[in-house]
Length: 299
Ligand code: 13P
Ligand code: SF4
Image (cartoon, rainbow, N blue to C red; front, side, top):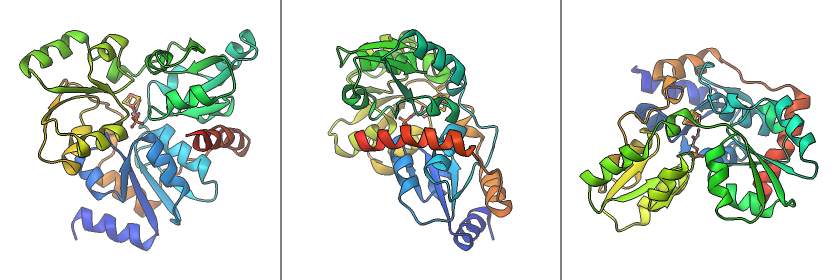
C-alpha cells in the first residue's frame, strides 16, 4: 500500500478527521478531509463526530481544536510546528497591559497561545476581526498580538485600538518594493493580500482577505489574473477551487517554514502511533474556551 492509502486506511480505522490549513503542503491539503482558514477549521472542529482530530497546521490551531473539544484527542503531526507571531505575546504581559488600561477589552487573534486566550475577552481570526471589534462591548481594545491586523481593523472603527508589537515574519518580510515589481510585470492583475501584511502593502492591494475569503473570491470572480499576497501554499488551494485562473505568487519566498513541517510520513506516523497529543490544562482551557466561544457567537 502506498503512504496515501495507508493514511486513509488508518484514519478510517481510528475514526480520525484530518484537518489542514490552506498553507499546508499540496499533498497534505489533498489528503485532508477538510481544508480551510482558521475560522473555518475552528468551526469544523466543533461540529464533527470523529474520535480523533489530526491537525495539519501549527500548534495554536491544534490547541484551539483541543480547547473546543475537551473530550477528543487532538494530534499535531510535528509538535515543533509553531507560530512565531503567537510566541510574541505572553499572558503576564497581556495582564500588565490590561492593568494599564482598565475598561479596555482584550481581543486576541487566534494566532496566540492558549494561555493568552485564557486572559482575553474574545478571540478573532483574520476573517472576522473587524466584526468582532465592532461588536464587542468596549470602546478601547487591546489587540493582541498582530500589529498589522490590528491597524487594518482600525481602518473600520472609531474605537481606540491599542496595538501589540507582534507580527508574522512571513508576511512582514514581503515588501512594497516586491509588490511594485510583481505588479509591473503583471499589469492589470488583481492584487489580493492577507491582513497580516504591512500597512503599506494593504494600501497597494485591490482586496484584503483571510485565506478563506480568497477561496470564495476566486470561485466568483471574472478576473483572470490574480497576484496572491500570502503564503505560497495558498496557490494550491486556489487552483483546486478555480483551476482556470492565472495565479501569480507575490513573492517566491512567501513561505511559512512551520506550516511546511507537516509531511505525509509525519501524518501517517502521527495517526498510527497517536502522537503528539496536544493538551491544555483544564483551568486554562475553560477560560480560553469562553473567549473562543464568544468569537463563534459574535461572528
Ligand atoms: P487565515 O487562514 O485564518 O486567514 O490565517 C492565516 C494565518 O496566518 C494562519 O497562521
Ligand atoms: Fe504564524 Fe505567519 Fe506562519 Fe501564519 S504564516 S502560522 S501567522 S508565522
